[in-house]
Image (cartoon, rainbow, N blue to C red; front, side, top):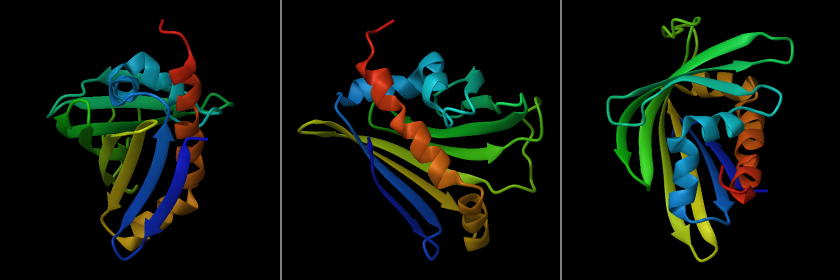
Length: 165
């Protein structure tokens, strides 16, 4: 499994997930740069994602929803702040109220840095989410963000191993 470490720090207000992939940085980057690939791995297997907008550029917006086995849709967005292809991107991740993708101000928002570093065996990905308060971090932890993110990230190996479409 790619996820090798998960740490949350209530003092620093961070959740950090580390994963190792047996693929070059550019290939791992493409998973996030291509909305059709990202749909195959974003969200846990039981809640597949559909990206409506995908603009991975500074100032860009990515909007998506995840669909539950019962057909319920959960809307969210990424507001992209910075992109350093193929090594990192920074974005704000938030829950949305509905298909308009307006921010759900009742739910926690996080600032994220996803970075990809070459290793002898491929790529180390580090995913760092920073929350505004310990309460916000505790809320997403209680919602199962670690389990969902781990299940999502662990799907990437199969995608990387598949022949290019």
